[in-house]
Image (tube, rainbow, N blue to C red; front, side, top):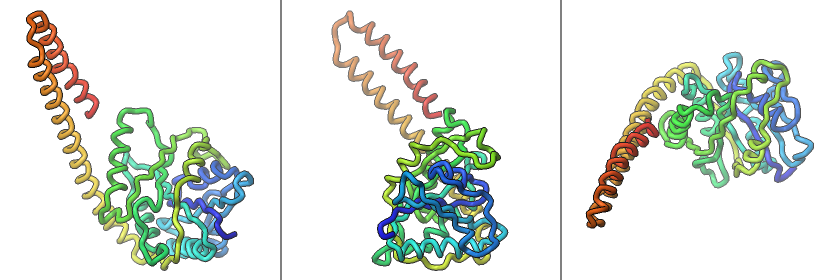
Length: 292
């Protein structure tokens, strides 16, 4: 159907694509689909009754050791079909974090899939041509989660060798213990569905074959590169925080000086001194704790 919208989830085995798609569409997506029986069984497609103009697609993972070539062919087939049918494709890569870091195989999948896409006019995908869903997030209420989000945003939002295609569209889906390992499980995600539907998406002109030759060696190279880039970005983030703290403290000192200079009546002096003492001692401590 011309003009149809397709919500396609890409990701490697074990990241929860099928559970998310079942929850989003209200239809059953089988998990753990194998590579037996041809390409039609590798791509799962469902249409939600309440959203007849939207198709939901589950794609195989490129990092599946049992068949990266078959997975690449299935993904390529889907993208070229979307191009032929003039579908608006909303691409989302689903991943989970490992020790608070993105896994190399997930970034490898993003890089390989987005590299094969050609947009109308022969252009390559630009920023925010895709979104990322960080699934099964634990400790989302913890203070450290905010720092984790900053690192993820820095890694995905700044172009690099490991992440040449950038995005700032990142969703975080909390971990649901009852859904972990449960058959045909679903998770609450009505709000997520609304945000995915309004995501702009792209029109694909064509898709070149995805090269998965020597993918294990490429993955190892990417793992090393990602390690170097991550450490560098952590240092940049810490430097930025340090600079911002210093600027805030300078502003407070300036405010204290301006306040003291603007009032000359003797009976105000003690009040000013007391206020300045509080500002100089308490507020910097609060800021330091905030950025720690």
